Length: 66
Image (cartoon, rainbow, N blue to C red; front, side):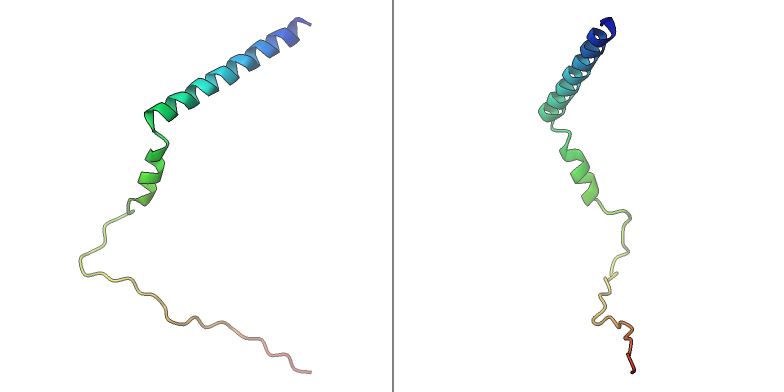
């Protein structure tokens, strides 16, 4: 029976600590940091570089003959 009480206490402490950390990240607004980093380019493009967009994509066709 002592193990169940200890397990409940440890579980409660884990939940409380996670809620405190969640409140801390909401208050400091650190969740937006990953979104901002995701929008940064991976490397600089040379000046005058253009993005080539293909106009048509050819797909192989299969012909069924009977």
